[in-house]
Length: 272
Ligand SMILES: Nc1ncnc2c1ncn2[C@@H]1O[C@H](COP(=O)(O)OP(=O)(O)O)[C@@H](O)[C@H]1O
Ligand SMILES: Cc1ncc(COP(=O)(O)O)c(N)n1
Image (cartoon, rainbow, N blue to C red; front, side, top):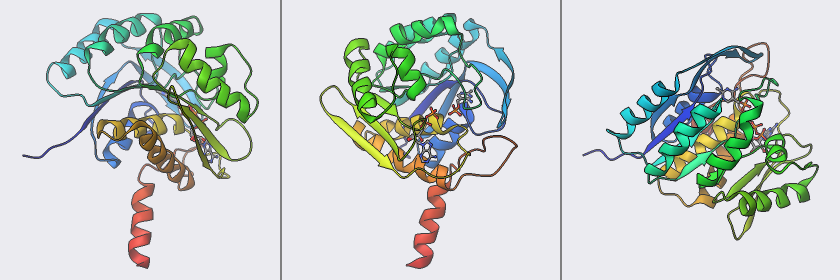
């Protein structure tokens, strides 16, 4: 019998394929986890920004969650865009029934600057979903909102990772430094140890969906039983290569390349 590890994403969509559900499923597939998805909102967006949003009825989100969990094993689960409090409540009630690591990407604003969740629901996300997560992956503006403090440098990022973990109760916190200048550095605090993940900053504006892709890669590796610090280390490599080999598609911030590792492998194979 074929054995496979499964990963579920609960998020909004991106018809241009670089972010949201589409980025998550591509990443799961590349990393050889069986991908499954529950859609929260259908988003009319592309590399230039969000045009329109259609929220699915909460009962329909519940129905999708029940359909997948009543039939399929779930080895890791990730959430992305959850637009409002009613959706958050349904998901927060459902998550504890799944005995699998939960990766929370606290999506608030897209790279284009468009808001993806209601402003007044951000606090609910922090207070009710974040404590359920094995790992939460805020970028700098998201970490600033969670703590209500400014984050200007690496020392602030390290402190923010610790504070979010201890004050709000996530199992681990990965503060991502994509929005600072200099090297692309992220800090993971797992409740006892601080880990640094550092890569050179790649000179590109093609960063649409990087946060989704990174969190999805962590989810895929966790679904395979890889320990958290290794899962983040490998996911950092995956997202860096996805940015390095990103595509100049669309008029705005282009998408990352989810099959970049295959290109690297092919190059290594050809030169060996
Ligand atoms: N230009 C870049 N070159 C290399 N890595 C980057 C670049 N921009 C972002 N990253 C990395 O991509 C990941 C996503 O980070 P970030 O942009 O902070 O999140 P988000 O997409 O949620 O805003 C992080 O590992 C960050 O360090
Ligand atoms: C449905 C959905 N979810 C998340 C993002 C954030 O993407 P980014 O990583 O570019 O901020 C997005 N643009 N759309």
